[in-house]
Length: 464
Image (cartoon, rainbow, N blue to C red; front, side):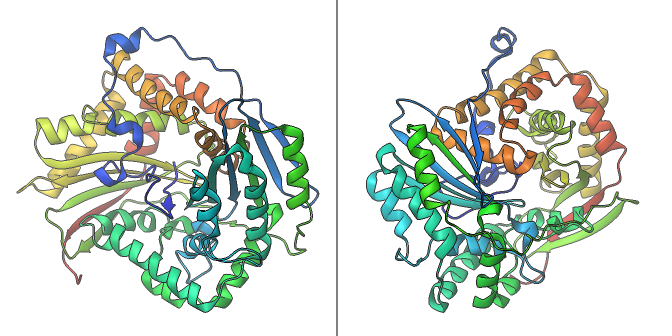
């Protein structure tokens, strides 16, 4: 899963490490008992009845009617994320996400709050490595005005210096709060730059204060013209709507938007294989206890190994009963916290294990303990009840997401932008259920235990 940098606090970070601030929603729930899990038959769902079309200007439209919900989710996902930040402008896609809530030719600043929150709905947005998404949910009778508003800010965004300066301060404060003020924020923020050697995934989506301060108003205008265009966008509408009327409104408001003649810049960098193990040191000014992290290169989200890595992550890190937590925190008491993450993006992935040392623990012994637990999962006995439990956790989270228009639209968007096809949202459920113990053990053996890695020691030091 991608790291999501959100505009508002209402949407949790996904796909990060299992510290309290980064837990995926399903990881906080207590798992079902083994007996209950064993009794559950495989879940078979009818495919989503997606309606897909593409306008003459290149806009991709995916819609899914859900009768009797009374609400509708209108989302626009753009094929631009942290990997597309201009050179020397890390964090720019995220900064621009904030600016999209400013004035347009026909809307004043913050008009989206009036069009959504004031009628009982909501709006949000996030930026990740491969995408920027704008998400709204409103009563169904407000669908037309939301379509107009999204088309309006796509075509006619107007940002002045005052708004630009204001939102840049907001984003820098977000960076300070999420990364610099967190005792372990610098460690996790440094991992992409140590895991990737060539691909722009090595720049954290949230960026750096120096790069954000270097951005100019001309950069904003250039970025909007380059990436915010109909042929780089996916419009998703899910909920209670009339299909014919939706098509009419989409044609009316999005159809006239022009597509620039210039091609859309695409990242063409292929991440090379790591040739040797490496050591690195990262310091923070307020580190209560040292930590160690191990990072490996992973496959893209579309790779056949992705489901097995997702299950491996859950076995190692999902909740109090997960293997790393039980072994290192509760049994050996050598760590305050431990986890494993498989962050797979459209072009490549990052695999990481970490442990925050308990008082007096040596980092080399902690590193060995981490590797021993990974090897125990890869080469030892794994009970069917254990793997069934985590598969059920993952499947339950996916099914719960599908209960609302907003959740369904989000699943469609992720599948479209990371896997290349909205229908992959259905296929993911079948693939998760098909993962077996042998699959998990194979991917850990090949991609972790036998792969080159970077070992990072995180200790106290440096200026605040």
